[in-house]
Image (tube, rainbow, N blue to C red):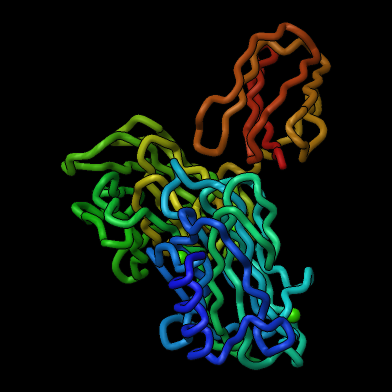
Length: 409
Ligand SMILES: [Ca+2]
Ligand SMILES: [Ca+2]
Ligand SMILES: [Ca+2]
């Protein structure tokens, strides 16, 4: 920190009534040698801070007049945070809320800590139902570069901390918010979604928005999907001149506010302009109802996360109606006793055993993609699947064809 920087920091801290004295009413200020790497995008519930850039000395107190949010005791909320660019900036992320208002960020006040050395992180967390936490509280959002420990306050080489003032309230109107997707600034034109077609949704010539995110109202676009049935899907860059990439679709089938890996019902890429295929939803009565669907594009990659940053791409959210299966479940769950998959669910290593030799086996994921195929001519085989998800195994024994559904967790 140069002298001018120190003076500016001291003046700005004194204006805010904050001093660097650990005994006063302010949290410890982390020290950064370089502010070259930083938090660029952050979102929690309705607070969305995009393209904040770097800050003097890597530390910024964000006034509530600029950004704040109210969070209710016992309620759960999504968080997304990212650096500026997936190629050059990777490291660790942390978010803490000083719930007990003692100006320290204790381990139990951790809201998110992600040490996957990535460029983006996301989670859903629940505010503890403790009425002593009511009131204005400081929330610290941090990023530190690759290889550095993420703690609430220390000396670091490069990174940034942003301190927000938020309100913890007793009650709040119920609104299911989903995590925010991000696209680097001025990159929204690079790989947008120009056309999305599924069931009765045909969103054509939708272009792109500056933030690359659109939430479409149920009244504007919706469709009904019956579990166990096949639906054609098309996602395309359309006529927009741009690069190639990948696409993915998630549906929050279990309605928990999170797009889990197993809820990615379609994906294709990473070098396409148009993706077409089929979606078939797993059969489970718990999945019926109005559900959030997220469609995502990503330049040069197949989107594997529904929240936070991609290299460049767009995200469109829809609300659809998932209905119970009228056909198919009995077929999928039929037990004809002469072959089995175990364990189910598994961590990916499954054993397939049969009373008679298996002539042919095919394993497909829920998008219909062929994952594994063999002609074992044996009554036993071992298969390893690396991706969590729900799969369908189709086995041919003599002239009999039968299917089993199983899950990798
Ligand atoms: Ca920032
Ligand atoms: Ca505390
Ligand atoms: Ca979910």
